[in-house]
Length: 171
Figure (cartoon, rainbow, N blue to C red):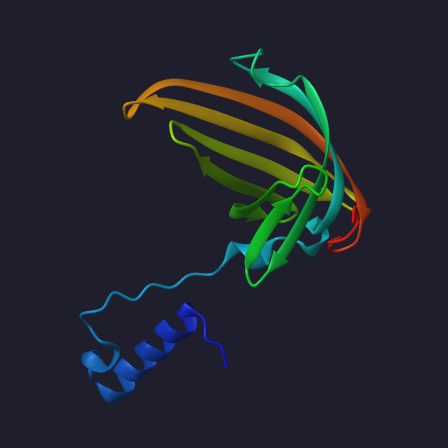
């Protein structure tokens, strides 16, 4: 039987009241709990998508493409959401910042030797397509000091290509 952290905290609180002993849950240990936003993402987001992105804002038009067409495969396994592109072979775990109905804000951070990249798509599901924005911020460092920040924001629209997952669509 799997118990979430929230369940364990709840059981510890019950034990403290029932037995009158705060040490029942190791009072010297910090216990935290939470509900995963990953489970709140509407299931309609998962599957293969054709994604069209059109640049709407940037501070460096030389660095970012004016538009792109991509394949995204969104999948969820064991509480982890993965975004992959079967054409390029790119694959990354993404975190969920916020879920409001059919609108989800994801976040993906990546690091290089002197660069940090933060991508934040905000997507609203509507049947077999979604719309939204994808903001990418790239911070460049030298000797640990921030020397420049470049950003781009794309308006995106996506069309569902197939079901919940397509692990072998291009194999």
